[in-house]
Image 1: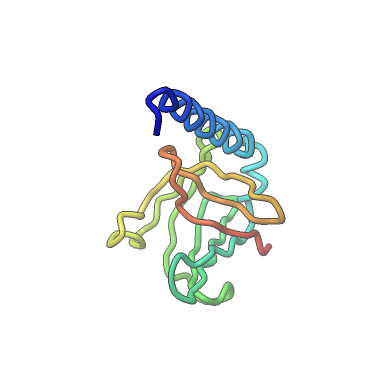
Image 2 (image 1 turned 120 degrees about the vertical axis):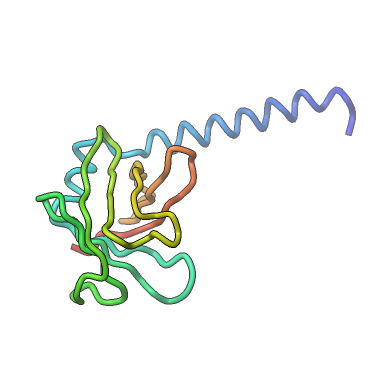
Amino acid sequence: MKTGSQPTLFYFILLVTLLGSAAAAAATLDAKTTQSLVSDRVWQQKPSAGPNYRYWSWKSDGSICIRTDDKAAKCGDTGHWKLNSEKLCYDLKWGGLTYGAKSACFRIVDQGKGRYEALQDNGLTLFQFTVVK
């Protein structure tokens, strides 16, 4: 690679990074839309590994019930949620202790076609989901 092409490559990478960040920021849901996506809704979390789906039941009273594989089963874990501006925050009673996911805050990104992504402040995806109710 020629020495003169390094600055060009740097600016190209910077431009791609900024455009990607702007696109993600533009698709982040505002507080009102996030509230409507949570209150009395059920999400089906896309499994990160294995065949198991998780169902998150978000109640308008601020409570959460999480189930595995069957959205009508008994709660495998419970907790509370709140909206902090456009960030959705949850705190579970016991779930996630092993994996450091007992509590988290995230923004919701609309991926289109009924698919969403829970995005942490560091830009990493916490999980992906669809709304089933």
